[in-house]
Image (tube, rainbow, N blue to C red; front, side, top):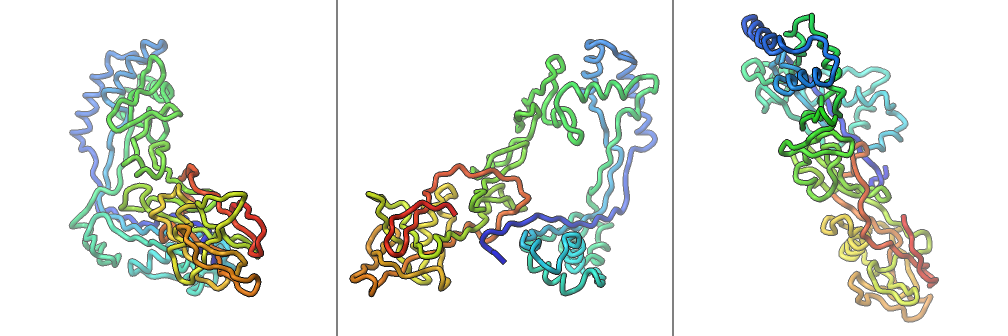
Length: 408
């Protein structure tokens, strides 16, 4: 499995248990209906002009378009996990089975039965689990310290939480003689919005005279699509941009190195990804950031199991990734080869001198692996490409041919 260039997918599994629901009582429903009918009694029943529609738009701005019809109380158990995209290369796990194995992982976690069959075996389950990481499990409602589903279920009735909300249209309270559907459609179409969030996404007011959103609500801003969105928390920690109200973290599309957001942490603060820089057969890496004259190359000295030089090299090449998060390494036998060049450490001090070529050689790096955090960057997370500030890595033939820039 290629641990250096793989990606991950975010998955969520949950079980919800409803103990009871609450809705408007008959008296409360009649009172609400009476109030709404009083509010619309003087409004045009079949508006035609902009002025008549404006009266209804003012009504919606004051009273809204929907109300909470029912709330379900109980609890929810949730499990989130990252699945490496390398699972796609498995010869025994079909993509259509991912859902079963995620559900099986969830059932094992909560102490429920897992029923395997010829299409979904224990062996396949074990292999699928090897592709998962960062598994997080938590509950809402009930005794949240209980991880066994049946034990937790017995506590939900005593500690229920609101876990389901059903909305109803205020049309429920409006006389049938009013062409309410037509009026509501005109209201929703006048300003930009979405089906799920409504006019101006619920974060601004509609200027009905101009058909545009005013995003003056504190904590909201206007996007290029004309809709209002919530300002991203912490400006995405400086490691991403706010797009459509969500943080798109910076991820280098070439090297798959950047930042991601994980539950419970500030957005775009978790470093992710890694990349293996291979100069190619018979080539070695030059010291990054060195000032060169006439295409000279200061070859980076290799020291087995020593990380200072490769880390320094990686931080120069990947400056746009906040260098303190970058760690370089090279600890495999095929990562280095002898070269007929003098070699230098990361700061430019000579580390090895070739006395007589080819009888004496200095070891140098062919492969340097740069790590940015402990996990891969999720493939399905929203991300933006990094603004490039790093140094293009330069390599040279081990026998002495002039260096060339290589992007790998």
